[in-house]
Each structure stands twice: as C-alpha cells, then as structure tokens.
Length: 636
Image (cartoon, rainbow, N blue to C red; front, side):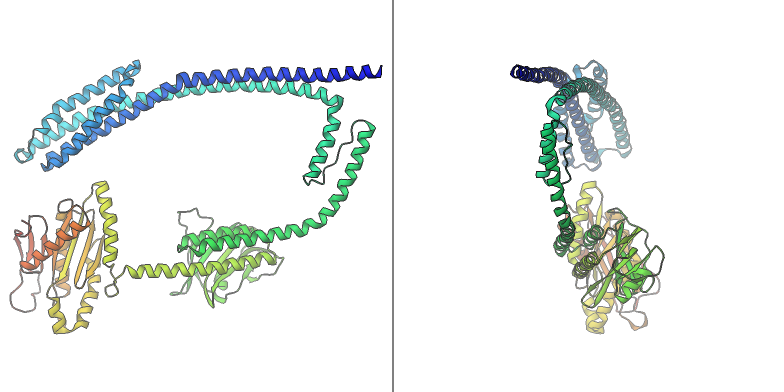
C-alpha cells in the first residue's frame, strides 16, 4: 500500500509539472505570434513608406542645393563676367536632374501632388524667365541699372520657388511624422498585448510554483541555495530549516558550519580592506602619473590631477592654483566645480593670504577644521573642511592643490601621503607644460620687435585663407619695406637701425585694428595680415600706416628720417592661396619702390596712392606730404 501511495504521489507531481509546462508554453507561443504580427506590420507597411518619404526628402534637399548652386553661379557670372562661375551652374543643373529623378515617388502620394506641382511650376518659371536669359547676358555690355533690375527679378522668382519648396518639405515632414506616429501606436499596442500575456504567464507560473513548493521543492531549494551561497563566499547564509526532521537536522549542521567560517573570515576582512584601499590609491597615482607625464597641456594636467585628488581624498571639490612670479600671487588654473570649456570668476590670491596663500608662501600642508576657520597644520584623524597642499619641484613652490568639502572629512595618514605624492607629480607636469608653452611662444616671436615671426605668419595664413575660402570672405595682405634702411645703418650705425625696427611694433599697434596682425617677415621687411578686408580697404589701412611711419620717424631731434614702401594684395581679387597672395603683395611692394618709395601700391591694376618726396636729402615738412594718384604700370 505504501509503494502504491508513493507511486501515486510521484505521478501527481509529474502531472503538475506537465500542466505548468503546457500552460506557459501556450502563453509564450501566443506572445511570439503577436510580436511577429507587429514586426510584419512595421516592416511590411510603415518602414517602406517612411523610407520612401525620407529618400524623397533627401532628393528635395539635393534639388534645393542644385538650385542654390545654379543661382550662385549665375550671379557670380553676371557680376564678374567670368565663365568660371558657370561651372557651379552646370553642376547644380546635374544635381537638380538627379534630385527630380529620385523624388518621383513623392508624386504618387495624393497629399503631395499639388505642392510638388506648384514647386515644379515655380522652378520652371525661374529657369525659363531668368536662368536661361542670364546665360545669354554678357557683363561687359550690360547696363548697371538693367542688370540690377534683372538680378532683383531673379531673386523674386527664386524666392517664389523657395516658398513652394518649403511647403513641399513641410508636407513631407508632416507625412513622415504621421507614419512614424502610426508605427509607434502599433508598436505600443503590441507591447501592451505582449505585456498582458507576460503578466498572465507569470500568474500561471506562480500558481504552479506555489503548488510545487507545498510538496517538496521549498525545503530542497532552501538547502541547495544555502550551500551555493556558502560556496560562493557568502558566510552569512543560513537555511530556514523547513521540511522533514532529517532535512532540518542537515540545515542545522550547515548553519553551524557557516557561522564558524564567518568568524574566521571577519578577522581577515579589516586587513584585506586596508590593503585593497591602499593598492587602489597607488594604482590611481601610477595611472595619473603616466597620463600627465606625457602631456604638455596645463589644462589637461590640472583636470586629471583634480579628478584623481577627489577620488583619493573624498572631498567634494578641488582647485589648482599656480604662482605668478610677477606679481607674486596665485592664479586659478582649474576648478572641478566649473564644467569643461567654461570659465569661472575667481580673483587672484596674494601669497600669505588665507589657507591657499599661506600654503603657497611657506610650502606647508595646511587645513581648516570648518569653513572660514584659521589655517593650521593637518593632524591625522581630525575632520577638516579644507586642505591646501603645496606643489613643489625641487625647492621651488609652483602652486597649491586645494581640496574643500561642505561637510568635514577625516583624512587618514595614508591618504594624505598619496595626496602629497599626487601634488608632487602634478608640480613636475605643470612645470614641464609651462616650459613647453614658453618655448613654443619664443619660437613664434621675433626677439627684436616682439612681433610674430615669419613661421607664425605661415601658420596663420593657412588657417585664415582656409576660413576665407570656406565662408567666401575677403582677406588682404600688406608687405612693408623700410626705405633706404642700409643707408640708415651706414650713417647712424646698426644699433640705431635695430632701435628703429623695434619701434615698428608700436607703430603697428597705433595704426592697425584689433583684427589685424603684423609680422616681421625678415630683415627690414614686415607683413600685415588684414582679416575680413578687401584690397580697397587694405589700401586705406596701408596709407594710414605709411603716414604714421613717416610722422613717427620724421627725423626730429637728430634721429634718422625713415619712410616705408607698401604693397597691397587681397584674396580673391589678386590671389587664390597663401603663396600667390604673398607674391602679389611683394610685386606691388617692388613697384612702390620703383616709382619713388614712401608710397602704397595695390596689386590690382587700379591706383597708386603716392606721397612725393623731395629729391634732396632734407628733413620733411611738418605737414602731411601731397598725395599723387598714378596708374600702376607693373600691375597693368
């Protein structure tokens, strides 16, 4: 009878497991069916429509870009007469053809037919009424008034096209949004259905689970779970001791064993924790040292050190202060409370003032127990609100690492040692970065005039000309040479010549704008880079500079009389790149010397603004010299 009862019990447990498996399997299959239907709707209907609209939108953008290229090319051709601008026009025409071909699918949508038709009509009107006639116009025979009227009519037609094109794009964007909204709605509904099925699956599984737990699963799982946790190192695990007496006895023995192991483990925990903490600090120091040792950026070094200091010490914010030798004050280099790329409003600190100032003056680690309290020597184990650690290289104090927190922090001796090591590495990296920065500045500065040198000019020219070409903005160059400088050296000595050259920095500062930059090109030759300036405006600046030089070095008080010849060139009127710009300005400079010196010559075949000098060697008159306008034979 007992055997039959056991067999019946086994069969009942098996049936329960089978029913649970069947119920969960059915619910999972239903969930997969709903999910598959949702994917079919999305991939079969919504995604193709959305992709078609997006592709059509991109094609409309291509058409718009092509129209802009055509208009730009035609306007450039009408303004200059140069057929080079028509290259952009023909490229734009090809791009329009490709865009119209690619956007043909948009015309199949009923809500877009009217807008696209209106856009094509406006586009064709612009082609037939303005673009096509524009190709037949020659700039040399076009009346300025008629040309202006023609350009305005083209702009009105193009604005009409832009309005219709914007309407099409707006409708396409609305269709894309509508399709995406419908797609999202379908997905949300499917997710809701799937979620309901999953909840139902969970409810069924939970019901079957409770039935199995009541029989045998709970006691066995409890023992197995406890043994697994103990094997994984969790010595706090204890079995609940439910089930038959034999299982309760096993649970008691298992609990006693884990308690014994836990007592042994607790004695080792404190030692291991301290070792791990110290190892992490040292590893962080090594990593930070490796990072900043290869960096010559002051900002990068300060950010890396500040972040590491907060990790080591537990303080809330860190600041790095650098000592400025003249005057002796501390300037803020980095503050962790200020986001990267932003600047804060931190005034300089005088050495000896406050916590940071005293640490920087005396080279000692100081702390304050609370905000605003007096700075004292740090004591191990005491809670402090601020800590100032001097950054020292050899016997030189170069800065201070400041750590602060709103709530006082107890900093142990080992953590303080690590912070000291970090500040030492930071001091070395900061000093190296400062030396590199000074050396880099010296390599780009002329020692005599303190102006940027020719090497800096070459670097700046590449950047500025690239920007000028990218945004279609003018840029000009003035080449300046001191007249008869060899005679000045022969008569007054090379010392006087050097003094004159050194004063040219002041002359440039008075005559030039903030956006202009003067360079010493070599010997007695200088170069001026004028940003956002065409040739005509550059000639005005050059003439002002010529007058200022002639006035400044007029030979008063027995000093040498010095004048300068200047050549002006600009992009795009005279050159296309840095090499041709310098060459054009240099040719204009030699033309200025050829026509009598002390004058300004433009590289373009227009005018020379020339100040006539007397042929005899005499001191110039008090007033400005007369201005003579001549054609530039060299440029012509």
